[in-house]
Image (cartoon, rainbow, N blue to C red; front, side):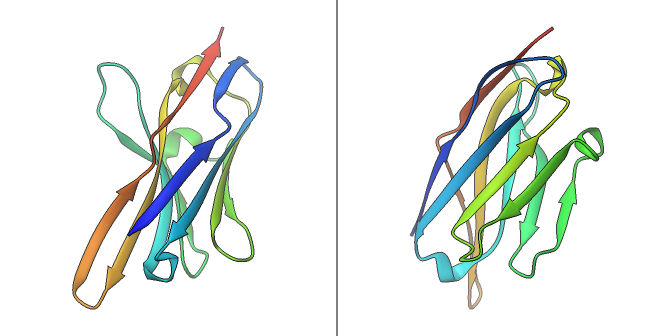
Length: 119
């Protein structure tokens, strides 16, 4: 089992910045990638950014150059630095941890944190 606790959401003006944090606990040795997803009202959940155990990252085209995903040295906490926020970035942001252990793969999710961007 992996538990994920997110923090850092809130209200920000367009052009502003926020940093989201996601702390993982439990069977963190099984985690091979962590990422941030978001879902706005009436829209499908989409991948925002992802970082693998080896440190490789990928981003949604809409956030490239504005958002940065990183993690602490222990690999227990993942951050999403969001700069130059736009109203269309407003959504519930959820942290994801993808684990694999042998042939078993599983996704874990945090509770979600609201990001609101005022124009």
